[in-house]
Each structure stands twice: as C-alpha cells, then as structure tokens.
Length: 155
Image (cartoon, rainbow, N blue to C red; front, top):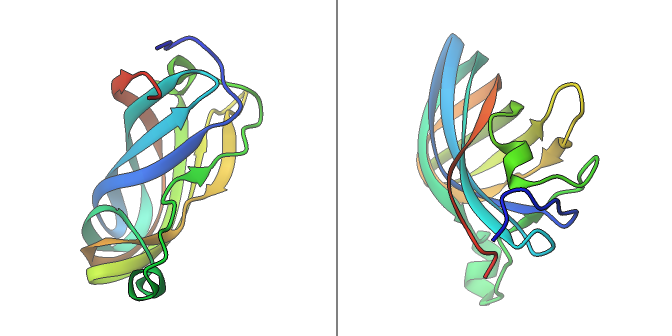
C-alpha cells in the first residue's frame, strides 16, 4: 500500500453522515476512497460548516429500489474524474466542499457533490448522488476539510 503513490482512477462511496442546519449548520460525512493505480483504499471524514436547513442521520450508500426488486446488482462506487493524479496523502487534510439535498425515512435519496483541493484542485464538483439508509430531510452547502482515518492496500 502506498499513501504517497498518485493515481488517476479514483472512486468513492458514502459510508455514513450526520448533520443539521438552521441557516448555519455543520455536518460530518464518512467516505471510502480507492485507487487501483495507487494501490490504496482509505476511509476519510469530511467535516464542514456552512449554510442550509434541516437535519439528517444516515448510513451507507445502497442500491436503488428498482435494482433491489429487479435483482440487478449495482456498483455503489462512484468514479472520480480527477483534475490531476493525486495520492491518499494529497487528499488528507485538503480543503473540501460538499453540497447536498436529500430526504429519507429509513431509506432515501440525496443529491450530492464533493470537491477537494483549493489552489491546486484534486477533484471538483464530483456528483456522488444516490440512494442510502437514513432519516431526515436537509439541504446544505458546506466547506471544510478531508481527514484520513484509516488506509490499506486496494485489495
């Protein structure tokens, strides 16, 4: 595994989140990122503050209801089109932005976009919208930072 090896084939998946806002608010989002080229898989927290309304508590990404009833397996990983190749270390403690609008009652849908890097962006406005577990209704635009929690080999 390599924390410093840059990759161009990044993917991410949402793991859990909690947040709330009444004009001003904050959120904590957990994602997992991976890159075969970098031989890296890491869990990251995004902690941010900003503006919005509502609140939510949720778990990980899930398949759409049509995929569940149709028995079609869905790949929950979202490809990231990086602005440049980057490493797991580059993402750690980088500036971040997240925008979201979603609702759920045990299971729901959220529109979401994520960014990393300020002066030299790693990725910008990557759409990671999708289905997942959770309760609440919220919309927010947050700025903050990405923090590496744990990492290992890609597989």
